[in-house]
Image (cartoon, rainbow, N blue to C red; front, side, top):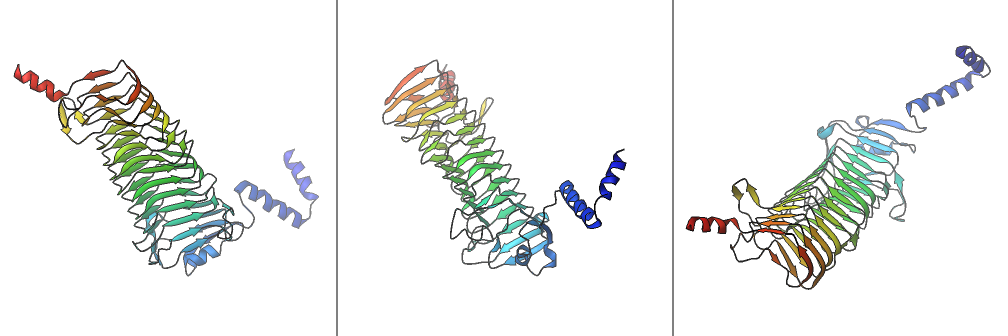
Length: 415
């Protein structure tokens, strides 16, 4: 019956009409967009010519394997475009020596009006490198729903990836971003950001998120940065969780300039020379269930511009395994600087170089309960107390303080 009805229906139409309906129907099934096209860049003299061939309806640009040297930026101003390479075998090398980017994505009229937007550019599976004289690896301005994944971005003279006014839903995932002279990933005026499962190594800073909203940064590996790990300024409603941040010469995580409503949770923050988490201007934030291991200065600092902070369930420790200390590196604790409304509950402070918790200046409305503090004052046994809170208005109770193990061992030997 269905076949008969279909045949009858088609018999009412002319041949051109039936052809048109067939094309539309096939396009609906296959996701075909009128005007879109697949561009094989190997058939063009340059990658720029392949980009220029993308029609207004967008399309897929397929980059072949090979090393492609450029001395001026590649530019793409179309939306609904995916640029896809052959993994690291597709290598764009920026030879520009005037600080220009390798790849610029932006609307044609962005420079005249920074409110201009294009939508849905995807970059996947290729490599961009430069030199100390080149600029950003990727500069994207005014691109909504940009999606970057599977890229290798390294040795660029500017930022690895620089997203400006990419307001709606930028996503950066499964990429390796290394050895860039500035920030690995710079986010400026972005919103609802996803940064997942990337590796960042030996950039100046790993990630900077400035004047933005709703950063969701999870499952990334950050190692050996020349300055800081993650810098967040004037950004609210954000979460850093499940990241490994190790051996930054500066501070692992900084929040500054009107941050509020952010959470730092379930991260490993290890061996950072400048400290672990530094709340310089942050309000209503939670620092919970992180492992802070041998962070030299302070594991957590709550500065005078911050307050209403929850610090709960963290492990702040030195490198101690069983009955022995593997390495006696300086291990900082918690520093409260002229702050207010801070709860410090359910944490373990162990093997701290000096005090576990110290206050500077007048602090008020501090609750310090239910913590374990052991093996402190390791730099000078017996010299530093577990708590140095003379300048704090504090509610304190139910904390377990165990003396320095070196003192215990000395007393035991004397017996």
